[in-house]
Length: 294
Image (cartoon, rainbow, N blue to C red; front, side):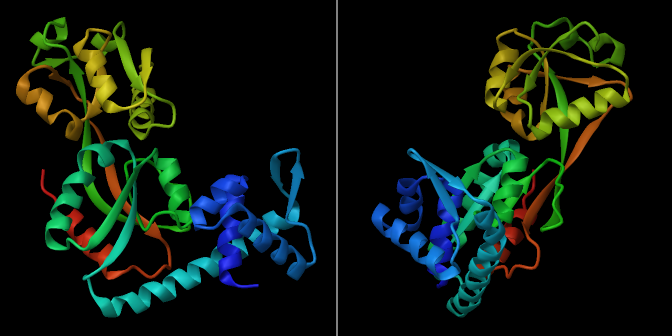
């Protein structure tokens, strides 16, 4: 048994497919099968079952998973510590970001960081907050940039930026002519919402519940760009991050409308695994992110 066996085991746990697991760990399908069989022989227990072409994780496999993950993480930490001696001359970073920071903020950070450290390779994956949190826990990401509520105590959170969610309407909308409106004016409006699981949606819904004003979701869309186009097209109005609408406000294709006595803010955060050694590259990227100015 060695750590490589654990890496192969975790890849198969993740994909439940020998071919895709092999692609992740750069092994052929037969090599994956051999390592899993060797691990089962070493432990004298079946870790997976096979129903037709379907791979099923057994109870013994579920028991082994956290121990395997800890072993792989420990080895990664050792490798990262050794790489510290190499400074920032080479290396890689895996970043997970929820939609708003991932689309409008993190690319700016990567561009600035790349200008200073061009030999550090960066891979960015944009997912919802829960998926980024899960990726951090499973060691799929070195850093995460999120705007939603986190629930795991395996995550270390650093404060980053305050994001205001702004009500936007098309230029020909009746509300566009008002500098400020009463909250009650929203009661009969059709709203365009992000998809369930979106941190933006969760923050808006929580605030509206506090204000005792349920909103009608006319359309649900999967990203801020789709929401913006739907508002511009007249399908409804929406709350969007101030970071997402800067260009549209300047071009006046969207109009921001203030609601009297109401502001909806959320804190964007940088996250990483608790207790894990941060590489110099990760620390430098965090410093670059914390220098970001709107």
